[in-house]
Image 1: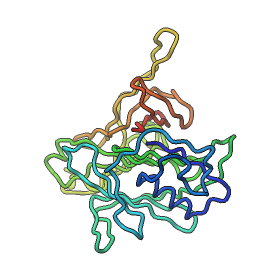
Image 2: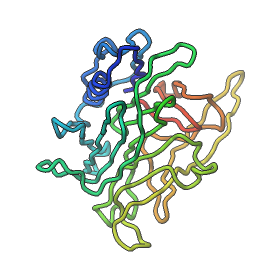
Image 3: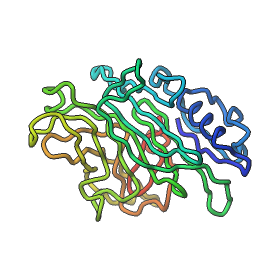
Image 4: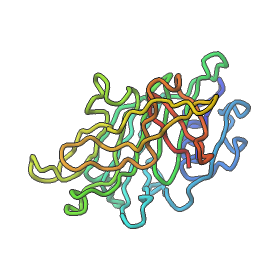
Length: 274
């Protein structure tokens, strides 16, 4: 499910918190279910909510569990959205969670400072939120950047060292494989590292074959190739994340693939909405 969340000038931080929480928990059946702080005319909704994937595990903090989409993985990890007086200040991803003390275990925290801004037609300002069985992604280009928490596929490492996490926090702000994002942008908070050796936080990046657009008759075809973590040692599939041809799209766009599935794209990366 993708919600292109747009807000009006009266949107409060509590409106923002409530809307994001309801989007994650599947309480938004149509854009009319958003708060009074939402610009419902310019907000849009695509796809289907992944029932049974997300649960809020604490009534005070905005802490959620996410069940891995691959049932063979049998993994549940946790993430937390923390707010200050004006914005979503940071996002944390954790291997585990202790409910009695509301504590994230083996976690990584990223500063994001995402805040709602009044929708403007010229700038198309707003926040795009994907909530699928493969990932949660929050794209806020005008304020806080482009961030995703994605399921990872098993590798020889994670199958051998079973406490390794199968989720990654990925920054999509830069084109993968270019400049500062060459081998970075992603963090797995807890995975076995042969260099340590032992469990540790791993900084990694996106790898995947960069394709070019091919003409078929009078039309152009977009090729989506699966993306992987470019870590030292075994690589992991990044579920629902694909490389697309260089400069195929400008900015953040939505398109349908050959299977008629919606995708959100930015910086040569395509994310499945469902």
